[in-house]
Every structure is written in structure tokens, then in C-alpha cells.
Length: 563
Picture 1 (tube, helix red, strand yellow):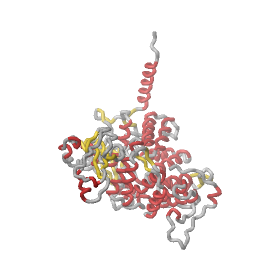
Picture 2 (cartoon, rainbow, N blue to C red):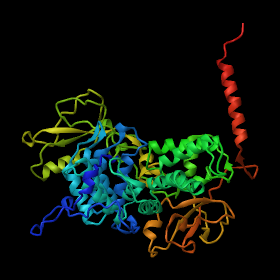
Picture 3 (cartoon, rainbow, N blue to C red):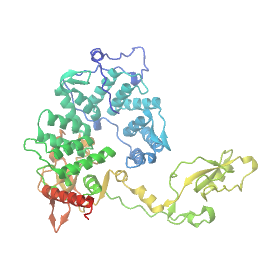
Picture 4 (cartoon, one colour):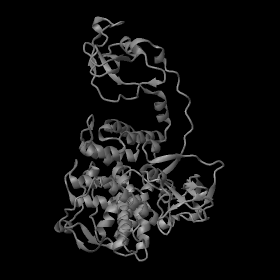
């Protein structure tokens, strides 16, 4: 949520901690005693969120990822199944999956979704989930509780407590809170009415800490400060470029503007329309889907003085080249033959097809005396189960196909008059069994459009981070699992496109306390396009010439014919 800037100077002068009654043992975390927000604090210790959160259960992670898939930004709003996601995230939250807990609280705090997939708000449940996450020490929970106090979502609105919660979250390691407060403190004087304070030393430390955790907003705020205040253009470009890799739409938009305007940056880039075009495409993609990450961006868009590689001009080619690479999963055993293909009449489902796990549209259950409101497969169910015979009857039913407005089968074979009424439940239309089978085996990041598949070369090529790159391509990086910073460093997006003979990225350049020698890089065998065995690059003058020719051709087509 966008934090509002409506701080009053007087209120900040009188910020006080909320005291806990010594006789009260049941003070809710939302009302916990808080240290007063101090915009002039003298010190800050950088802590990382990854070292504070509880370990993630694999099954809970699968539920979390499926919830993310069914609400993906790549889907149209009326296709995003938020009720299903809430169900999945609630199951994962029971296993203490901290990201699922925060997503669940976020959806419930204000409600979300578009018909037919709408989740109504339940602010009290949202606050309780955040309180449980606070009890687990999850930094993001304290940040979210601050936002709840800012907007009075399930709690009393109190901007003073909001800032106190955000400061606590930043101290615990929340990169989001660090980026937010870092920007607020990164000024030369105080102006509480506008929401900023003059504590640049601490503000920059918070931004550097957020950037070190791979937070895109932290990268953008840090890069903007380096660009406009310090005039450190060379590092500003690097930090903003890294911000694009981290998913910062603002960083991509800023770099598109820099290369498009030809802004002079002490020997930095002049006008470069080719780079401008690529950054603007990335900015648009990140605006549409903020979950995207582009760790291999240098494959198609390296910073100067590196030459710009060839690109076919297609948006998806650019995005896919910059995404992370995941190994192709081993094939699942072939699905068993479909017994429904052996049935006849309404119960027949063609071979190679199966009913989906969830119907394509939600249709209310229908009584046996009515007609099917939509065509597709329906299954009969008794409305009450008084004994095991009723349960056995339900289990014996099979999906039956009905056309739209066709009456349901009113026969009650095996039932007695006193057994009660029957309802028919909509199951949907059949889908290709192979597609359903493949979806079960698809990597969750690939299914969400965040990564692409690549073949791992055999035998694997491994290289220590303090050596020079032996082969151009995509490399993934890891530190040993027992390394103190393994939880932070060993992420799915910890990849880079490196040219042969060049050094591997140094973790210390991102303020990570990891030596290059501790990092092992693995080659993914993904190189730039080759033509005639030669690595080709695009030239700016060639691009401009082609654009002028195209503009001339377009003008000629629009010119009226001479008589």
C-alpha cells in the first residue's frame, strides 16, 4: 500500500511509547509497547530478513506457489482465483509459511478479486494473522502492522505508532521498511509536514541494507540519491541497473529516461535509443507484473561501455533472455488410461481428456428437478447423509454430460423416497489430459512466467567466484548451506550473465559480507545469438538509420496519390 504523507510536526514532537499495563498479561501485539520513532537516531545495524524468518516447509511452499499462480498478474483480473489462493495460503500459513501469512493478511485486510473470484475483507482475521507472524519474529509482519495503523485497518488509526512499527521492522531486517524509512531520512533538513528528516547518514545505511537484500525499491532510492545528490553517476547507473534485475519498475523507467534524453553524466551515456527502447520495454513489463526478476539482464542489455548484443525486436525474446533459468524437470510417468473413456452415453469422456481439478466457471448447485444452466459435466450428490448407504451412493456416482437447458436425469436408482433430495454439481468441460499432466510437473516459477527452462550441461562446469569466467553464458551462484549468509544469498534469482574472461559479480559490491572465493558458480550454457560463428552486436547508427528509413516508408504510404 502507498503510505500517506500526512505527518504533523507537533505529533512527531510528542511521540510517546504506548505503555504496557504491568497488571495486564493479555495485551495484543497490535497494542504492544513501542519505542518512540526517532528520526535522528545516531546508529543503525543492518540485519537481513532471510536470517530472521522461520524455515519453509516444502509442501507449504507448493501451496504458496499454486496460490501465486492462480492469482498471477499474467491472468486477466476476472481469471485470478483469489478464493482458491486464500484457501491455499491459509493451509500454508498453518505450517508457518511466512510469505503465505503476509499474502493472506494482505488480501483479507481490504478484500480482493473480480467477479466471480471475490474475497470480501476480514480485517480482524488479517490483523490476527499478522500478530501471529509478529510472534514468529517475521520482520515483514511489523512493517505490515505499521501500515494497518496508518490506514486504520482493523486497528485504531495512529500514524505515530505506524512509524514506530516501521522503524522496528527496519531494525529487524525488513528491506521494505528499510527502503521506506531510508528515503524519509535521506534529507539535509527536517520537514515533518512533508514527511522527511535530515539524517542522511542513517538513511543511506538503511538504503544500502535494503539494496543488499535485493529489494528493488531500495535500489531505486539509493541509485536516485547517487545520481542527483552525490553526482556519482557511474555507481548510480550500476545500482539502478541492478534495481531492474531486482524487479524495480522505477529503476527501468529512470534508465530509459537517462539513455533516451542523452543526459550528460561526466563521460557517461549520450543518447542511446537502442538501450532506451529495451529499458522502456522492461519498465512496461514490470509495471504489468511486479513479481518479475531479470537476473540475466546483461545478456541483452549490458551497461556501457559493453556493446549492445543483437535482439530480434520481440518483447518476449527480450524478457525471456533476461529471466532466471530453471532446470527442465524429469518427465512424470504417463497418465493412466482414462476409465471414463470406456463408459457410454452421458458418462463418456473421450480418451486423452479429463475433467479439470476445478471447473472453468463457478455455477451454483442445481436441484434434480431443474435443467442445466450451462453445458458440461455434472455429478449427482445427496443433500443429506444419514448413514453409510447414502455415502456409498454418492461414491458410486460418475460425472454425466448435459447440454445447456437440458433436464437432469430424475431417476433415483438405489434410493428410497425417504433418502432426501439430490443436487447436481457442476464439474466443467474436459481438458486435454496431457496439458493437465504437464502442469503438475511444471516448475512453479516457470508456470508463473518468472523463469524459463534451460538444460544443465553435463558434466556440470563449476567455477569459484574469485576466478575469471571461463565460458560466456548464464551462471547461477551458491554458497555452502552452512554459510552464515546462505539463506540470503542462495535465492532462485541469484544468477548472472558473464562474458568469457570477465570477473564474476563480487558480493561485496552489493554490501554482502561474502568473499568471492566462498561462491560457486555453475554454467547454464546460454549464450548470445551467433551468426556465422560470430557474436554480433547492434550499432546505434544502424538502428537510427533503419528507423529513419521506416519513417520515410510510413510517410510515403500516408502521402496522397498524385494525379
